[in-house]
Length: 240
Image (cartoon, rainbow, N blue to C red; front, side, top):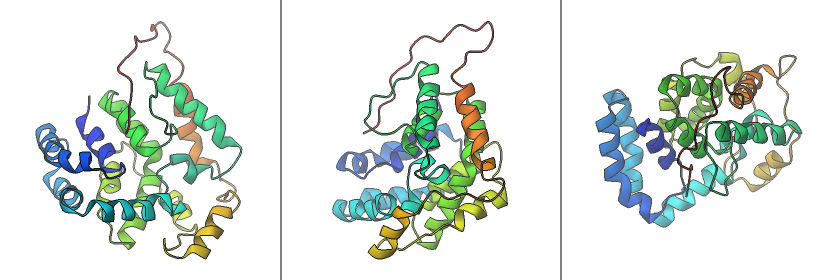
């Protein structure tokens, strides 16, 4: 198990008193596993300190403004790939199937493409395979990190870390295509309403190029390799 992915998952969760109290344990986990360079851990430390010492109400309000109200910062992978397109439902089924194909069952009510849920799954996988899956999503994480940088948000460090760990680095054109989409201020209610009402966006003639690898990987994950038995059930992924 890669503990660092579980720490990053926790940091992207809704702030609670339980999370605040767990910060010292999260710091120890990052240092003990030593997967990240010290400079990267220092960047994450800023977010850890904010969570540990911030007023809980303020932390929760900030989280909602960033990730729940602002579509361009959604913590659901397929929001950035499919929007409200008809392929989104099948993609959800495929991703859930990949989890179950590895003997994992979703216990939480969250959708399978919720990024903290995805990171929990990666934490259970061999590190090489986890890095490869990150490579399929790196363009999304890169765009999210850039938008958070513009907002001077400490959450940027989580997504910078994920891009750094990915086996394949994002293509500039894929990141640019995402960054060209509307990114309204969380307090601009008119712009936010318009963003949520927009039709699904296509990124030109190669619109599917930024998603096909990810979807193919998810579908492949549902099929056991030739001659390999279906793995026994593993601990249930849970996210609160």
